[in-house]
Image 1: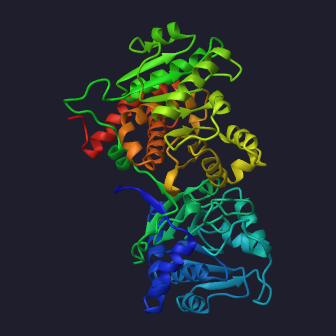
Image 2 (image 1 turned 45 degrees about the vertical axis):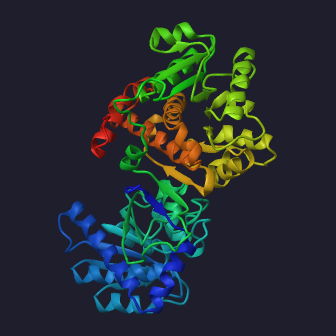
Length: 512
């Protein structure tokens, strides 16, 4: 998939760097020059010129600080007033000398280096046009920034009119490999990362702190044979490549039939939203099973009410597990999922009806609270806050204990599937956090699984990619429904055909 953004772990990056450094390649100089180019671009956008700008560099004790210092020296040679604030007694001395030679000035908040008070350093930052965050790099294991550096970071983050922040490789203090964010972190407006994205830049909750991510090539090359990225994020071209596109020989059964068990008389809207989304995503046929068939058909007359052949199921939107009728329908349909390999999306109330072990062709779509309840029933000790703090960890555990593909909904949607597949999609506006949005997502995914059901049984890891694709299209449909403003779930469903057509048109894969 050509457009996919992939993230490598810190150990993988080091493994690629080591032979290049041993051969004498100037990786730090490449990284710092690319960083300086990105900062210069920010200054031109914000000030229309680079010369005369003010940049403050926050410098830690590792190579990340060295990258920042060399970038500061490059900017100083271009007429930028550069001030460095060191936060550690141990600083990259060659980078420090380069900055001073270029005319940059240095102060320190660390003992033993001509210390100045933190509030004096914060005043320097407050007067800057851009701040470079080079305190901690990929050696950080999360937990925020500690010590006097943490005091500085917390004070800068609290500034009422904070300057534009550029993170050097990663925002200091995030969990580089797991996306945790449990202590002081200086949120970035732009993260310039070297060689490849790092998992913490894509995974929640740290992904909220990274701003726009720019990956710059410093010549690391590809992963060794057998290695694969830890996390991927699909781009629109990837979604288009995965989409089931009909041809002249297609008919409603080859395009996929989706069975929907959703809604009750108390919550009929969930059934309407899930079936509408499946229809408008492009399913060949949608069957509805439940007590509100008349309401569903009144909104979607093409929906067929009653049992019959299906390729995938959508279980649970708007269903309470104590609803005896819907419970029986879901439990009966699960027999087909387990015995005949029909794909399934298990959402909301149906999560409590999940059999002890299923395959990756079953996709669970919980939010954090629902995942915590599921895992608690499976013997784990976690609550909603715990899931939100470490979503990748808990989504993986749910995959391991159930065998299912897991799509954990949130501001960044995390998908975990067969073969170590992990996706992190951040396509949706915050406005999409609204009632019924999950019902629409379930319908989208049900239609995708039905359209690719033969392929996913040949390659079980494909299910996770399809789940990530559904999240991408869901988010883009919300953007299309009302750019920059509030959206409702029905409007998102109505925007699906145009969203999908746009993806396929851009990729040149319209129906043949």
